[in-house]
Amino acid sequence: MKERIVTYPAIFKPIEDNVYFISFPDVKGAITEGHGLKDAFEMAADAWRTILFDEKKLPKMTDPAEIKIEDPGAFVALVSTDLTKSAANFEKTVRKNVTVPAKLTLQAEKKKINFSKVLTEALREKLNYQ
Image (cartoon, rainbow, N blue to C red; front, side, top):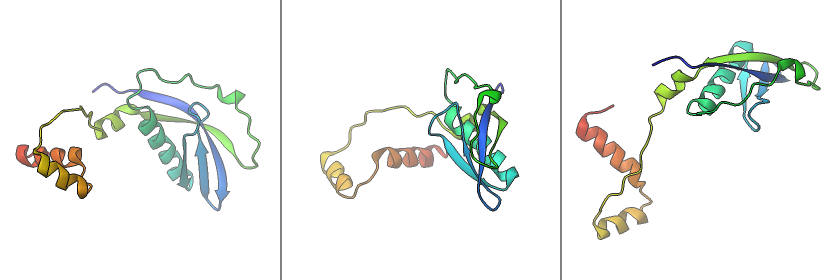
């Protein structure tokens, strides 16, 4: 699989001793945190992979020089990540209609059984698929 390397700015804000709150100007509402700078950068990269791995059109990168920082100790840093790493961790799913006996369906619904999960587990077992 061809690598899809992306680089975006992240705002790292210290919130307590060696703990950083991380936000991303290019994806509103996306946040994470890390314990220590190494972990903070790894968590930021992981957040980018999780958010963007299946996006066809990626957001335009904000120029880091244009990002205003008001919190003392906070800083902007570029974070790069390979989106193919997340794509490999997430399986694409498809919707399938199945026919199930009515009595079985009623009992399963009473027990709040997730039909998709049960079918997926059964298929994996039947096909010896991990």
